[in-house]
Length: 178
Image (cartoon, rainbow, N blue to C red):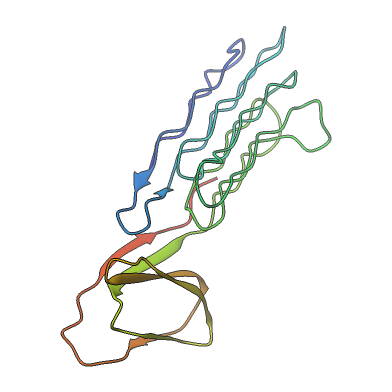
């Protein structure tokens, strides 16, 4: 995924933007974007870094209202950073189901939590997948002879109907760091 933004210490008015994540060839969305850096300025307002494309959370700030904006370009929006002027300060959370990193903190508070992960499995649309009862999933027909199933959470097994050979493409994204 993308590298998180950098907070340079006291006097740094702007946090770095989170890095761009990886583009999935299965569904066309970005995953694992870096969290925006927090910003601290002891004399004036600061600007939090933007979350990276792929679910990165926005960076928090020490003063002012220019918090880092979480990535909202994908299927799941990430959280914005929070200002020390509010009652709950810190970095924005990475977007759920993207593995996006949490935003950094400007001075006080806590970095945002990383977004949960996801598993995508693409296969020919002539197959059907049986999903275990402990898994949360969604199947999307792509319309080009393929479909994919996204697994969001849980534990369990999957099986495919029909006889092999079964060829799949897959993407496994772990949860993001905070």
